Image 1 (tube, rainbow, N blue to C red):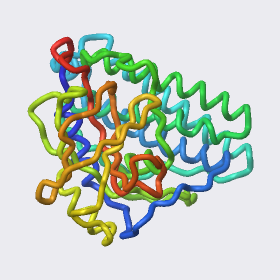
Image 2: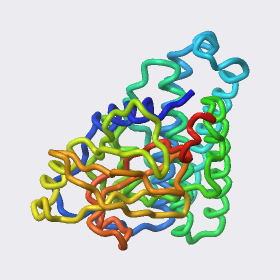
Image 3: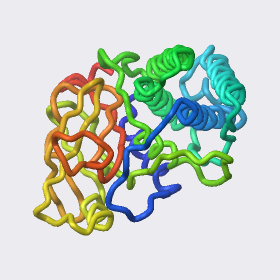
Length: 317
């Protein structure tokens, strides 16, 4: 099942549900400690738990079989839900044991109406979860917390590989997983949060959303073009110093790589004429003022997510 277009559509819906971004010129890199990171992880686990809980309530085993996901897929989804519930309990307990306040479950809207949409978004969210833990690892001081985070990370990665395989995608499309920073992950997660109030204030900011134009073709490295709908107009609204003469770059995150490609202006949009070579799988992209400084203060929108295939290799999946 080739799901690049489904991913783009779901994320466009999700990112349109909430826009917590204030009009500001710079999103700052947050200052974190271990408890902040634990609550950050708990925020993500609550979201994932709710996502699976809703799906198991809304779709039956027969619905999954009819959609092409044969047994024991439904039972395995139940196990994934139990994993997410266990992660919630563990992280909440760790924060409480440290004599701090854990965050709580909020209100969410995922925009999922079919089994295929659910499975596709499941693959994306599990990938984001893996990237979140990987990106946070370098900032964890307590070795026990670091070991626990690593243990959860590997389970999230197995979830990702399993779901991808069920979608007939490569379960391991790249030799390295992709770390994301706190604000990048927060931007993706906040898109699905529609309400509720946490007793904890986390020091994260969301970037302006970055929307991929719909494409009837699969994205291939070193071949496909990508258009970011309304991105030039949005960039000028976010930062009034941006003009037609301002160089803006699409920075692609794939594994441990960060590859910057200068964008072109087409009306209100930005466009990348050709995806860079050497990227594959679930790839993240942000818009940046800089092609060399990969930090939050340089980014002006994103991340967006696209599924990228090797050049000439999309037919294999």
